[in-house]
Length: 130
Image 1 (cartoon, rainbow, N blue to C red):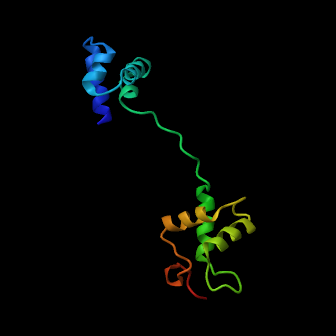
Image 2 (spheres, rainbow, N blue to C red):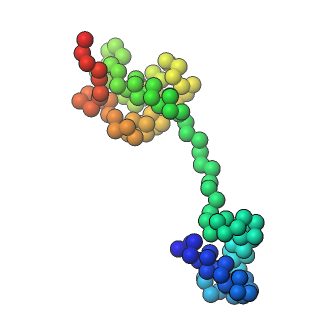
Image 3 (cartoon, rainbow, N blue to C red):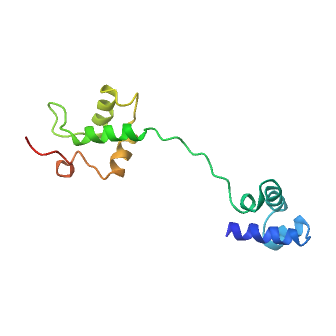
């Protein structure tokens, strides 16, 4: 819908209509119409019709670090523990120097994205018994 409105605004401005009139016709503010025209002049049709990509936050873990944490989750839990917990995995990843630091929520989301539930032993993938 936003793209269509922007295209209609450009079309009306090309026909010579003033910015406030274009805005009134399309239900946009005069400033919004002016900005659409400005983006068209600076970057062409693509820039006028579509929003620029937004940067977003960098991921906390790189792919190698993710793989290593998943490998730890799939391994046997430490001595004295029946299974891995999210908190225990986060602590172990830092202790083994897999990552400089990692939060429980980051580990939880990582496990969730791979559909791993190490606290449920039946869902953990383990190698063949020796």
